[in-house]
Structure formats: structure tokens, C-alpha cells
Image (cartoon, rainbow, N blue to C red; front, side):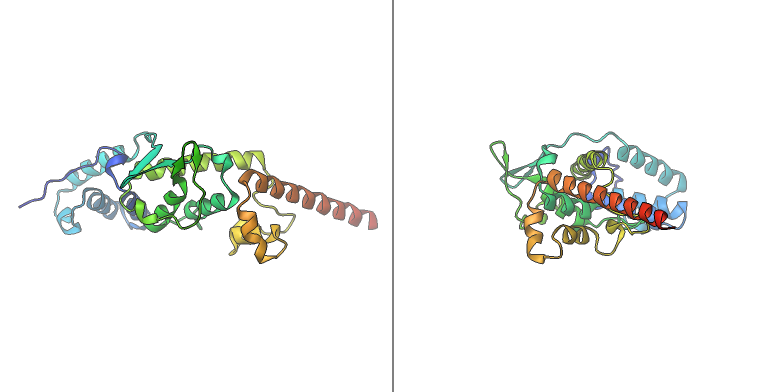
Length: 249
């Protein structure tokens, strides 16, 4: 008996795990034929053996329909119900802590151009982004939130949260243009180093590990302003050294 092929109509009908697997397939497929087979197999939950036996024209038609579903506008997903809990997406992004910001950034920022985040990363990201509220007040993030609450999340829930986070990140970078690198001439960008945000946090703590937690609990806007200040001071110092060097010639 041939299994009925069910094509998802939009992102709410595609799980987070599936959409990440689809992105990975796009990266890893060696040719168009393999890419089409993987997309149909993953999105429609059909074995690769069954897909391989399908006529090419039929597979292309299905893959095109899946592409349309993936490219539909993201719906607004402001809350998720998990068991008896209602978890709401953070709306006042600028009021989150620096620790929350760097946790989310590390969970969605690619480490290299071909990097696809794992389903586990996605679940942890959503555990930070979707939170319990007490009235209008968001519950404090403890780090003990349960990522397994989001194992069965759909792609719309995940991608909407990621989109909102990237909008926050864009605003922060626009407001603090020299913060991102904190680098002078010939210096490496700490976010591109092996130490990433840990190195940035350690520089703010002046190497005092005991101060890391204190810093991560500060509002992200306050920390970014300090990073911007440090970057501008370093730039002025570098410029001053260059001028002093020219005078000595």
C-alpha cells in the first residue's frame, strides 16, 4: 500500500526539527536530484527509498509546493501553550539581560557560513525567548528552563522568535556601531575568536571570573553602552599613539 503524500501548507505544519533538517539538506546535498529527494523525504515524512522510486516530475512538483510553504510570510506567534502553561514571547527585548542576549545570540549565530544550528540549540533558544509571565512582568530567567518543552514546536514559532531577536540585534548594532568588534588597527574581533562572548565578558570583568555572573545580570542596553564606550576609548588611544609616532619621525 502506497503511503499518501501530505504536503505541508505553511510553516505551522512543519516542525522546528524538520525545518532545520531541510536547511541542512540544502547545504549537504551534492546535486539538485539529491536535494529534491531529501526535501520531499524530510518535509513529507516519506522514506528515501519511496521518494527515489517516484517520477522526477512528480518530485519536482512536490518540492516546489514545499518551497512555497517555506516562503510564506511568518505568522505572528506571541505565545505557546505547553501543558497547562502559557509561555509568551519576550516583547520588551531591550529590557532583557546581557546574559539572556548572549545566550540567544550564541544559539542562533552561525559559527561559519555553512553552520546549521541543531534542534537542541533551537529548543534552548526558545526556552529563553518564550517565558512565563506574572501579570505584565516576565519571570526571571534562571538558566534552568526546560528546553524539552519545545521539542514539538513548529517552524513558525521558532523562526518568528529568531526574527524578533535579529531585529533587536540590528537595533543594538545600529545604536552602538563600534561595539561589535571592539577592535583597533590590527586587532582581531573577539566575537570571531574561539572565546566569543566569553572573551568579551571577561574583558568587562577585567579577568575576574567571579564578576561574570554580575555582568550577565545587567540590562543588555547598559552593557552594550559600556562596550561602545570602551571601543571608542581604544580608538582614541590608538589614534593618539599613531599621532605621537608621526611626531617622533
